[in-house]
Length: 516
Image (tube, rainbow, N blue to C red):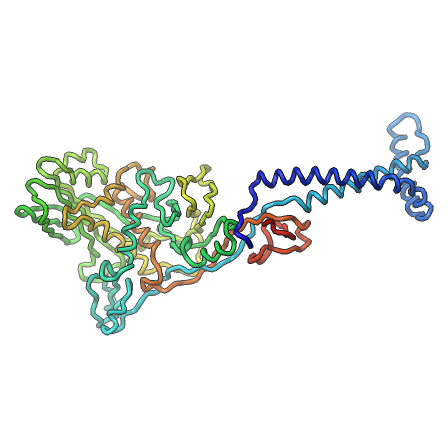
């Protein structure tokens, strides 16, 4: 199959008109050529085929009876050679008319959609097991250390009741979630996120599909489909997990204290956590600073895997030159953000109840799909990802500890941005600009800071792959392929389906010839 796009509707309409004109002219010529000899031999036909003459006598008698009932006076006898010739000519015209219809039906191109099943792989709930200390160098991005095995440095850790420790790296190995997500933070939509929440690889992701696995649009399965069907494939659909609810809640709490010219202490309050920072390049008597940090919040006891606690704090310099505290307060929808010289926020992340399985569709050509009576507009992006709001039932559960941990560790670099210089989290603050709930990607976001952090969590889940130490699971999806061709007649007449597309066309039409 060539990688050619199905014909535009204008081309199909023009072709239909031309075919109709040709068929009409051709049928008229055929009728003109057949009429004289057929009429000349009509009487001969009646003599040789008594049943034909009997049929005509019956038809003409019925016609005469009808005319007698319609008119007051009886009609003359219609069963004459002249009248039989006229009726024969009329039947010939009907027969030639069917020729016109057949030509138009056969040679008029049309486009129908074939549905093709395909398989794709998703990150599953299984993960790497570290069973002895000697294998520590083989530990990938995410996994579990069994009881008695030492935990690894540069990891976030959640101890489990059986003595095991679930771990995920935030540094120390290239290509893990934390380093993958940070470059994508700039792809989050700023301001109104009703069009799309973020984009990845040129795919605009609607808020209904946040966190859907990127293998849908970057995996080998979809690449094979594109290689086989080219632009003819316009949509894939699959039941996959998405981050349906924001796992982050933020509130204004915590306290700050300073020591000397460079030291800042930040206490989180309820969690019993605190953070100290030394800003060697800032002078607290003249400069503004931010001190932020991400903890697991486990306090060394058994805790929910993936739970994290983020602290944000801002101190504005005495001369109000750079209003760090006001910038942070603005993300929390404070009525008078510039009145604050210091501002602290604590956010808790727990994604265990935030996932939902939905039918996610990858639109190859960004056809506008109706949602709530309105067309979705993805701001000019070539492809888009959106989902049904109603949940679907998956073939197999694919969400587990690795997903919860990915949502948490994705926050690490955005939260730690700017440290130990001035600590200013420019990537987050640039995006957390609107506190209008209509602009939020998550329906349960209470402020702009929560919404941005929630989308970052979705990016962490979306970018998971097998290199993280997570086992893949295969699920079934379906691809919709448009094909333009000549019809072979009705669905009862089997023709040749396009290459690579088993089964029957949804529209009930088979093809004899594919238009290249």
